Image (cartoon, rainbow, N blue to C red; front, top):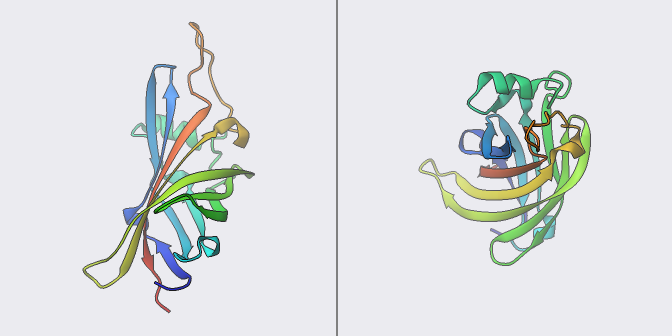
Length: 179
């Protein structure tokens, strides 16, 4: 592959997952089922690469409908007024081999802050239908309070119900767009 190429995220083969500590003793994991976006990749010059991702807040799934409803409410994501989470890269920096630091702006609830994803290219291949595909994994940890996700309950024995730190993992498969 020479020069930049454009790839569309395949939502049926991609995941956006998160994990938070619950009651100071366990980890609750969830995912967003609706993700879309575009990648521009330049394997020879990473600085020419960028990513643009949109996640539908209403697609949140923690395997507990009551909790999911609470997470969609104004206490957390306020899906009615802020239906999408977005990430737009500002730079892609090689970090050795097939790993990269992807710097960008994460917007949640109308609030935008810079974050850095530790990203890895998992590989390139051709599907049985002749489409070129690529896989990526990205990880970061954010402080949810920076984006206004401050709801919590103090525990009688100390600590809080929901941790501030949220671990995020992105697993993307993307299909090359042919002009």
